[in-house]
Image (cartoon, rainbow, N blue to C red; front, side):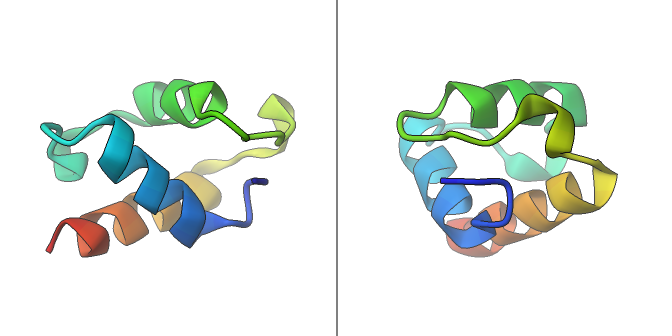
Length: 64
């Protein structure tokens, strides 16, 4: 997975953090959690607020 795989990342976050409400996750935590996902190969310096917002939005949608 790379930073642009927002849906795949969101699904993995649902599986790895099922009790977390993504609406209240800080971007610093979100960045760290994405980097810790198995199979994630993105460059930590290639993320930005727009990407993290897209991941968070996809995660929220997956929780519904």
